Structures are given as structure tokens and as C-alpha cells.
Image (cartoon, rainbow, N blue to C red; front, side, top):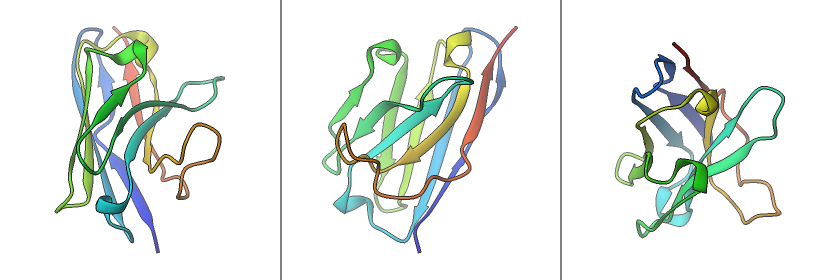
Length: 119
């Protein structure tokens, strides 16, 4: 059974940093790209960063230069290092395995981790 467990969120001041972790079980990182999504209140969930099994990364423009996605395939864990955080980064952050722009991701959502950027 696939399980995705996100952690590392919290309350941080603007300009601060957080590192999120996503522990996955039930499948291997070697077969899927992984991604970090976020959902702000009243908004649709959006994919903000992806990493392929080969290590190629991609970011949505709003986080480029501030966020870094990485993964440890041996531990089946993905990370999102978030620097220079802004209030508009406030959201619940989720990880999953993206499946293109139209199809939903491969697996059911985990509980997510709340990131709040506020002074």
C-alpha cells in the first residue's frame, strides 16, 4: 500500500527558510518522477517543483531561485528546501508522483504539511 508522509512545515517569518521532507513507501522512487504541490486557501492545488528519477528538476516560475527539490532514492524520500519565503508561499504542501499536466498524480494524497509565512 502506497503511503506519502510529509513533514517539516511550520510558521516562519518572511525571508526565512524551511526544509520539507516526504517519506514514501509502497513504491520505488526509481520508477517515478516526484513532485511537490501546494494548495493555498481558496486556491487550486498547484505543482511547484518536480524531480525525475535521473535528477532533472523543474520549477514553477514563482519559486525559481528560492526552492530546491531533491531526493534520496535509497531512502525513498524527497525534500523541498525553501528559502527567501514570502507570505504568498503560505499553503499546505504535499508530495506525489506527477503524471503529466492533465492526469491526476499516481497516488492518493497524504495529509500534507502546513507552511505559514507571516511576521
